[in-house]
Image (cartoon, rainbow, N blue to C red; front, side):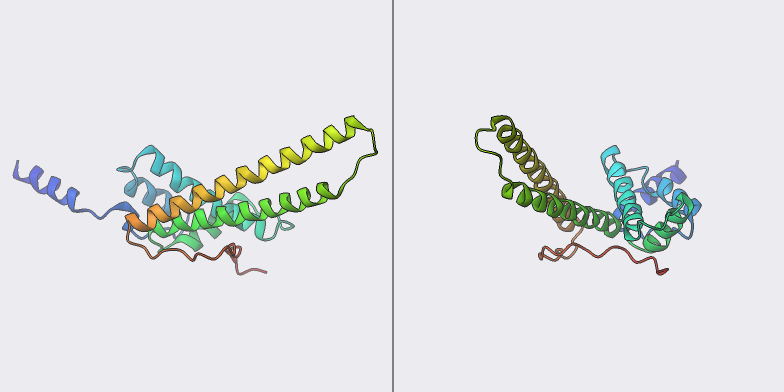
Length: 184
């Protein structure tokens, strides 16, 4: 009975998984680390961690879209990038990369809207006028959706920084640079 009590006390003394440094020398080690350290987290938290790792992989894919990268290569690059980072920093990195990706897409849409605003229809061509107006509205809605996504990511980063006593992220609107893979 005493042994069980000691185990319960020790289990309760373990650090918060978000404060743990990720051990990811390779994909197998990362998988073991995740299963050992995230079993106490909620489904939402595990999903957030997986989404952050996916964003890091996407960043590697976008860095040099002309070079095709295998899943094995992406996993190796992910492991190299996050090995030794506290889990909380990896999650914030995922959100920052997501914001950067959304901002690039938003800027593309703003350019598209600017172009559409310059277009003119023939006088009296109501079908074309209606179509162009609908296109402008659709692009405006897409821009609004990206604004909402960016704001949700920024809000979540702020929540994580407050929860884990992390320094506030930079407040400038410069998207983070793509992750360097070292093989340019």
